[in-house]
Length: 343
Image (cartoon, rainbow, N blue to C red; front, side):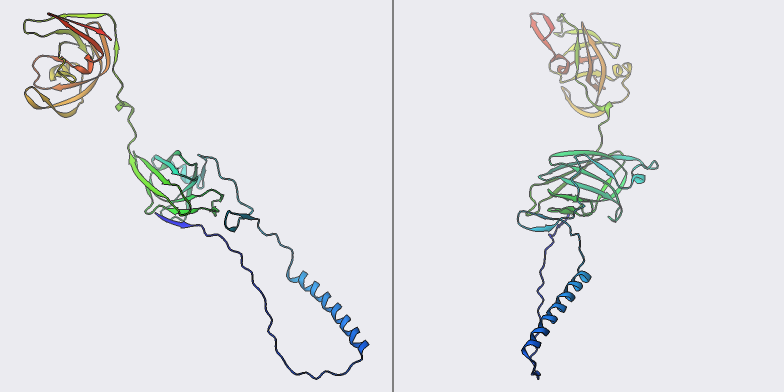
């Protein structure tokens, strides 16, 4: 990132000096009275000429106001304006920013600097400005921008003037290489720093894909009350009838299983068509499996929504009811009876 410090204007004072030349002159004799009269007349004529000359060459002018900084006196033009409010967006080229022939993607800018900033996007040459946005310190803005490559200028400081001058006491930073707005991605920029003397400004730049609402995992919810009593089979297991996505299934209660596990046959009957491949550890070692989320699972008196399941192709039996479901319940086992109730 290239940073150019704003130089303060300096006032200079020039002193005119006259060269003197000495020469010998022959002065004729005059009477005292005539000499005095000549001096008075000459003085009056000189004064009249001086006044006329000053009016001719030094007309009245309106100079810009001068604002005093803490240590320096700088020229502060009278056409300066107050800093735009946080989040104010200026479409410098409205026609470009409202194009209908290109896709738009997100641009998020977070100002972690100790001072406010104004960010300007322009074409790759930096000559033609498109849009500007004001961002307060410790605040962020999000814009929708046509995809493409942009140059970026960052004005930061405390005393704003205008888009030509920037901040009177700040600096202008140019993001080296510009930024890219890509289709289907949000460009995230975070500016860091705290000081203007010396100038401090750092940039963290990354892109991220927006979250697909269909991929947001919703928490499981238990619907039902009362208690479910299960009897132990001669083999020492407990079973409960239920359903996955409305398709009947018999679950074996397995407090040693991390998630609900089902066979490929049950998955097909339940309408599960897509799943994420994964490798899981079972009693028979590592096996290839895949995971999915079902919208509806029931067993006994209870119904759960948004439940993760693991599909095991070689699962013996139909399904295992694992701890991602059982953790919502209180489980008590006395002799050959298991009681499952809502916590």
